[in-house]
Structures are given as C-alpha cells and as structure tokens.
Length: 527
Image (tube, rainbow, N blue to C red):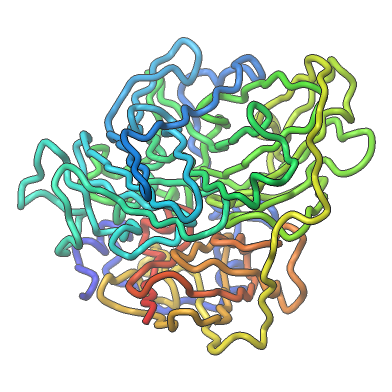
C-alpha cells in the first residue's frame, strides 16, 4: 500500500511527499531549538494550561483500583473493561472529561500470574475506534494490538466513516467488543496496557486510555521485597488543561476522525502539569521503612530525571530491582535515573534513612520550576520492617554478541518536504503491507538504532538487552530485559533482541506518541 496523498497531506501539514532524510548530526543541528531539544531534555513543544496550575503537594496520592476477575477456571482468569467517557476531578475545583477504561484514569490495574492465561473483554462505548496493546506482553499477533485491528464503537461506525484519514482497509476489526487473550508465558514484570489506534495513539492515550498490568510469579513472590501497602505503582505523566478543566491537546480534529496535530506539536506534546496516578503533584504519607515503587513514564513525549531531595543519609537514593520486562539478576543503586516515555523502573526507596517528619521530594532534574518536581513523600511515622533487598534477585540470562545471527540498522529521523515534516524509519513512513524485518522465531539479532533527536524505541513481542551506546558499554539504567530503549539525539544504540513467543506480524516504533502518529513505525514479521 502506498501512503495516500490525502493522509500524507494531513499528517505533514501540506507536504505532498517525504524527501530523503539528512544525516543524523546534520539534521539535529538543523532542527536545533525548533524542536526544543538539548542533551538530557525532551523532544517536543510545551502546551500551556489556560487555568491556574494547581498547588504542589496538596492532593493525596491515589492508587489505581485493582480489577477483580469476572470469572476464573482451572487455566484462565476473565476480566471485562469498558472504554467510556467520564467526568473526574483532577485539578481541584474543576471537572475533566476523560476517556478511561471503566471510566477511570489511569485505568484499573490488572494482576496476573505468569503462565496462567488472562482474557480481557474490551467494550468500546466511545465515539471512535480503539485498539488495545499490552505493552511488554509476549502476545500472539492477533491479540497484540496491531494499529489497524480496530474495535469499532458499540454504537456503530458507518462504512463511509474515516478510519484515520487515510484510504486503508482495516485489519482484524471487531464490532463493539473484543476478547484479548494473553498467555503470559513470561516472568514477573510491570507491564501496561494502552490505546494503539493508527494515527491517534497520542490523543487517545492523552485523554486517559492507559493502565497497569502487573505479572507476578513464584520466584518474585519468594523474595523478601516490600509487599502489600508498601508496593506502589506510580503512573507519571504530564498534561495541560483548558480553561473549563478539560485536557488541552492540539488535535487538528477534536473529534479524532482526521489525524494530526497543529503547528510545532508534531515534535511531541509536553504538558505543564505533572500527574501521578491521575493527581497533580501529589503527596504520600510513608513509614520509615522500605517501599517498592513500580514507576512508569506514561507521558506522550516528556522524559524525567528522577532524584530525591534531600538525598538519604547514606547509600543510594534508589535501588533498582527491575526493568521493563522483569527483575534484574542483582540490584543496582542510583542517585538519579532518567526515564523516557513507556519505560518502567522497579525501584526500592528506604525511608528509614530519613528522620520521621521529613518531606522528601521526588524531583525531575530535567526541568525547572514546578516541572522540576513530581511528587512528595512525608515520612509520617515509625514502623517495623522485615523487608530486604537480596543481593541475588532472579535467574538472569545474559545475552552475548556472539549469539546474534543477523545485524540490522534502523534510522529514526525526520523526513522533510516544503518545510513540513513527518517522522520516518529508514526514511520511510509506516505502511501496514510492507515488512521491514523478518527475524526467525527463537533467534537473537543485533538491532543498531540510530536517531536524530530523542526517540524512545519500542519493539513489540521481542524483549532485548542493550549492548552498546556510541560504541561504548551501556549505562547502568540500561540494565535488564527491556522492551523500550531511550536514545538521545544523534546516538547509535545496539540492542540484542530475542524473538521468542509467536510467529506473525508485529510493529516497532518510536514511543514519543506524536512521532508514532506521524508514521514513525515499521513492521517486523517473525517467521
């Protein structure tokens, strides 16, 4: 399929076609301040709120509801979720319309057991098609959330209605409801589920379509890590608000029938209010004990540099025990850890290193002012603590360069025409009919990922280990099995990807959601 002229004009803001991409360093220099990029910051443009930004550290940290199964049998747990609009209070004193799973933002947390099948029935009560992707899941292709495998609105979707502003037949489309089947033949990990509709992932996730999916197993359960109330998911994202309290997002079409964003926002949308679990700059009372935080960057484009203020009396601020796709082999200490969109870090903070009464701010070192803080912990009281972080966490298979049977290179960069832009992989926009890589099932490959500006690159199905950055060993934050890697401007990052699970067609793409919607995505087919 050739990208239709109509769709390309809409996405590129008037450009008729993409031209070949300039070299990475040249393009990075040429784009410069126009993209708002600098080493360590985010690629995107800031959307300013029209209402007064709320005060910090006033709202208690909420926790997403844990969804209960509607039924269970010897092999399977069954869940149901309805995607619908709802009015919720995010900014105190204002109502915000969200699109939420069961009408909540973030959506309910699903907890599954490794090796036990989970079936989630999604019902679409919204006005547009949706797609659901279990991010980090090893999932058969028909249940992975391929971008044109739509769930059409339950109220109907006429044949003449736009499927995203392009002349494209939908894929494996369902009317009203769809059952997603997840075998979860994978170890314990912090996964998340979110919308993945072709051309509209950015605005639909921004409106609220995202939630945690936590996989547990016996190996993790046996560890003496913090549990129960001291295991806390943190869904961090940024949003901007209109004067009436609604989310402010620069969609070219507010009804989300035609794709695209206005002006410079194709570079990425950065909000000016930081939310954690749907609350602005919240505060959490903690005891002087260890806590485990499952940290997810659910932002469209913003990166965060996590640190603690004040720092603990001794030792590291954070002890990392897990990455995107599961536990590390051994813990790693960090005083600062950068997290890009879609990345997850499993971190332990020991609040016994602070005096009772201390207020500890989780800071964002990549920004200043209010955006330089994320949330606050109040060490409110003393308590006993029998948790520890053992020196060995999990059996961990370390991949080696010699295991690779193939090396591939992918350039994530901008295609420019007539002063307008689209985002491409190897100079090509996404085409559902074009296959750009065919790894063999069970094989290990080296993927060399090259960027112009910041691009967090996500592979569906395949988990990987970072092999090198700029020809040097990876950083400490690259440790473990990952499904998303943060690549800084002009970098070359090598990853060792292992293609286990299922044969079939999947995608890989930039997880700056505006870049993804501006066709920075490609197909891989496991054969």
